[in-house]
Amino acid sequence: MLHTMVTPPKTTSHPPCLRVDSNNEIEAVASSTVTGEATWLYLISPPILPREIPGTDSRHRRVRKVQFEMESHDQGWTSTPANKGTYNGSWSWFEAIIYRASASPCWLDLTSGPFNLGATFTASDIKELFPNPNPNGWHIQSNIVASREPWVHSITWTEYEDPEVHVDPKSLKGREGLGHELVRSLEPDDRVMLIAKSKFRGWANHTYRGSIEIFYSV
Image (cartoon, rainbow, N blue to C red; front, side):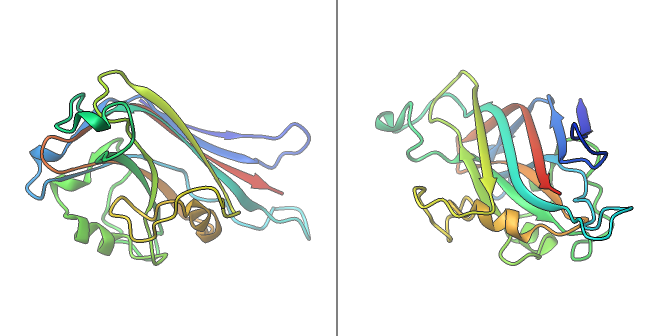
């Protein structure tokens, strides 16, 4: 089930937060794909609101923070015992992509709940479907290796760089450690997509629930 909510502030009628959440269960299984890479669109946010606030002359909205929460686990086993219980060598993860309607095909129906993008499109196809902003695609969080129990991960990105995170702009899992780029790139009418991924034979991403929250300053 999908829920979308706009939360009003206590002292004004202008919404400071967009939230969407889902408790749909999916299994993004790499072995079930021709390319060996599973890609599920698990959740997509409502469109980013216009910068201008109706009825005011000088006040503008600005996206300050995006927060993701996922409850998930991988396939529950590994052929590398040393990695069990860690994030090392995990090929079950989540990625964020910006959907910009002006640059993506209008025939894409992304509003019907979790959607198996990998059943129709390869990883290179998906980059062509969502070309802007360029680069597009950020690593959010990997699953713990070889866990049969779901874990809850909450990840917050602001417009500011985090000097303490590992940064890999060429990571195969998305631009790792560069979430501030997504916050800075968001424009009115953009939507944020939460993508469940797994890659290589044997890997899976079992997702039980997830949410996206987009916070504004006004």
